Length: 287
Image (cartoon, rainbow, N blue to C red; front, top):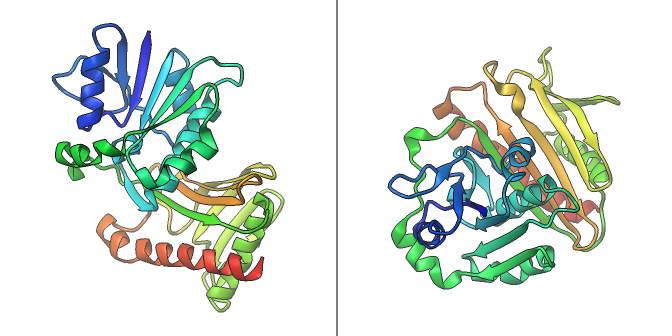
């Protein structure tokens, strides 16, 4: 059988490979030398990559550590990133699939949350929090020099009543206008969503509406002053909501800034983090 392990580049993952490699074909999203596994570059935030990679697999193992996530600039709560990634994996699998997904959770405080969201016949959450200290000793390898200059930013919100994705986008638009005291302007049409700064003739970020439903709203980045001209059009701003748990997540994926990387890290990145954290308070107050 073919087994794919996300986040295998840690002590727990390496022990799993050693146990499985005698009887299974083991594939990973980490390039691990000296172990009998096959490296397949797969970004858990890219659904088409997941579909391509997982269609031949029989079992999927997801270890909730940083090695499972893309090798880029990660901003936000790691738990939200793992939930987002697992949702992408489930979305990439056919609805009639008999593939088994095993979530090895190394953060004990999130066991119940994972089980409430994902536990079913084909998905199993396993508490591996006793391995956390060992994992830290083994260290997840994420070398800085190999990082891609892509940004992955997530804001998780837990509300007290239901909100759909379209309402969340409208609140996001209103929030940007109010928090900037009118300096930020939003132009939203049936197909486009543009963020501009007052007195500037060209938008900071241009986006197109790629998908819209009550639980999912996707804006695809197409250009703008803050977007890199070299491959910067893979970016997406996505709004996800869940009626059953009143949970909302806003994710900025594959974004490549136009600013020089070090300048971005000390300017635009902290500003974006601050803006998104204040959005949570705004939604709580106004919804």
